[in-house]
Image (tube, rainbow, N blue to C red):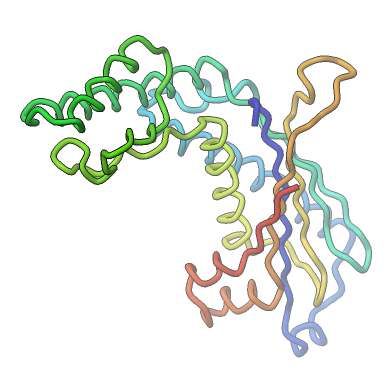
Length: 252
């Protein structure tokens, strides 16, 4: 995603009819307080996503290493519809991107050397040797190449499974933040949303296009869950795994 992460998450929450009839009307001050608390939850979710990625690459200081700044969130109440939050997501440091690519490359080299250690001479061995030479000359990991004609992929050295495709670090960051936002959707109960209303969270790169006036071609990810599904999870009528499955994901 060219270091730009744009995410949007939509949540829905409902209360039972009986509760709605007996609950006292919310004051504007109480609503503002709930919105401020949710802003804190959402910025924390973005930070947690970055820290999750940092732990996966064994970074010692995840908060300052992975991203270029801090997340921010602003909430607006939409009468009769719900609450909308705009979240600024800091970009991933390019130095971290290169560090992760280097780690992936080193892991591929280590795996190939391990496979070649006791492999008999064969076309598959020569393919692996060629891959190793390419990796040793490269600064980044390589995608799994197609096997030459007449050589089955499954016949690679000692019939080992093909190494997984290297994953773009920016995509890993996106997935980590998206997962943290989904967790916030399911876990935070402090924001009262009426029957049929929605909680919408739109998150995007806090720095915008790299060049002033340039077209912002970043994508948008929309996560949405029905109020009935969210309520069912909170009432323990469905499992967490099932609740996550019911979160709709759209990208545009």
